[in-house]
Amino acid sequence: MDVNPIVEILNSIFIVLPFLLIAVLGGIVSLFINGRTIPQPYLGAMGKRVIIASFAGLIAFFLLRDIATSDNVMTAICGLAGFAAVDILPLLKGSFLKNIYRSIIMKRMTDIPQEIEKQRTSLIYSKK
Image (cartoon, rainbow, N blue to C red; front, side, top):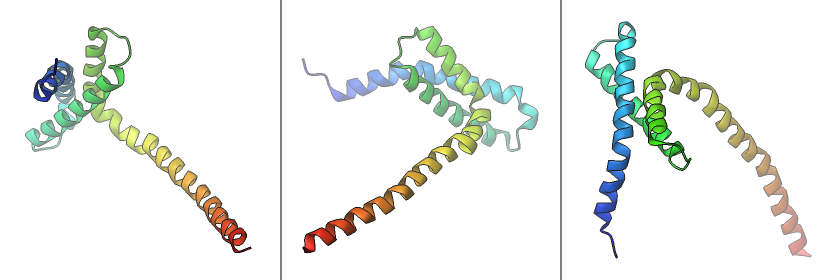
């Protein structure tokens, strides 16, 4: 039986939606707990935190989706990801992503001379 693609997309959204809402609620709770450190305007800061919390909740959901965990555990982890997202994401950006970028750039820098040498030797041997 052929399933309509729109129905598949809606089913996928309805599967992710509860976890996303829990992550957003975690972000809102984090906002209220750290309310004194939130700059004005308050609604702009709240919107940013909600977006960051929903992003962290989605990442947590997609990381845990294939692991055999219960829905309760996934919901709790998505909520905690939304709660801690604003504090953890700058740390990830500062250390984790810099190390990844550095390793990618260093790998490319070491591959470039090897590629040049391969091209040079292939040109030398092709002339003979």
